[in-house]
Picture (cartoon, rainbow, N blue to C red):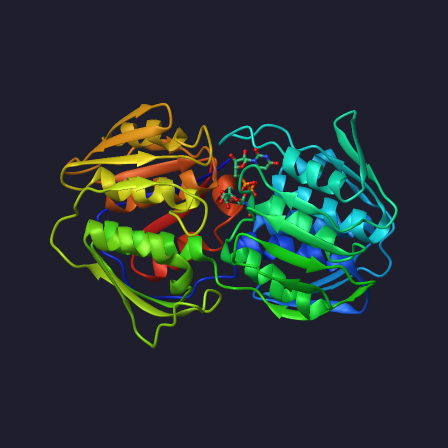
Length: 429
Ligand code: EPU
């Protein structure tokens, strides 16, 4: 089993380049299933376990995929096996993203129902209900979602709760539907915009992405297209916190700063300076610019954070900002409103000396002077990043097991941190 060993106490400095966004690349790759003709060439695809999973999923369906460095070419003309097997879906819930495209283009799909998840129940009822409103017949049998449809029909769909992959799935279904679809209370994440721009390049007619109502006029067919994935805002945010927690001074060469507004304002509050080094345009959510991050004050200040759908504070940054709070002066409060069980990292941080109390969906963090290195266990992707960040600041050695969580969403994390002067290695024992 692999573990990551972090020797704490080093200030990081230098420059780092962020990879392509995992949560953008996954729906974009799923969207290539919609192309009847031509190949799609996707650039800036990160090298991650979740990306390998979706590639295997599409290859199993008959797609032709070539990968070199960070580019991926995908031809889906010969796809005929419209199935997503349990063996792959159980390792990555985002596999559900193939359901909308398969039903829209082929009128059939057999996709394993994702099971429970460490961070919450995460049902997919809203994906299914939306597809039914578009005329699909859906049954759940033997753990599989079996969908059939003639050509899907445009519909007026209102989400009860904001769902990112739910919005993406229904956008991809609606682009080939007959007529107009309105998606109301849609998610507004920058990754939704990235998907809409790509779908338009494929020939889709979409407006309103990035607002609460997305309007899609269905077209008869779509073709492959070329596209560059946006930089990963969560990876960028994680490096910002790495600079803050280690009292370092780094430049992120391509931070999607406009997409990080709520995080950056919290980082300012806690005492970090986040300074764009070129012109910053608030509406350029998808572009990366050079940004310098260091502490503005000698200590860190406590603050309160509530996770919310975009443009609120991202749940995917909750574990990481908690590590900064653990070392801030005073008491901070985090409310997790998106997932019901996303505090598993707290118990590991406590083992490193953090003073954190959890009650329901709220964590009260009383800042301590220092953390001490300890053996810890990652429980999910973002928790693993949080524990490594804690290790950067802790006295002595932190050994994190269950590294496979980290590899789902951070490409070359140790390598990038070591290039900035950290002391991290991966061991196999
Ligand atoms: N929900 C329902 N019914 C549904 C769908 C969602 O009740 O049919 C609920 C969920 O249980 C949750 C809330 O709605 O309480 C929001 O979940 P959402 O559907 O938005 O999450 P997701 O689409 O499954 C994506 C990201 C997650 C990120 C969340 C929230 C991808 C591939 N995954 O998940 O990313 O945490 O949005 O922003 O885009 C990660 O990268 O570490 C990660 C978990």
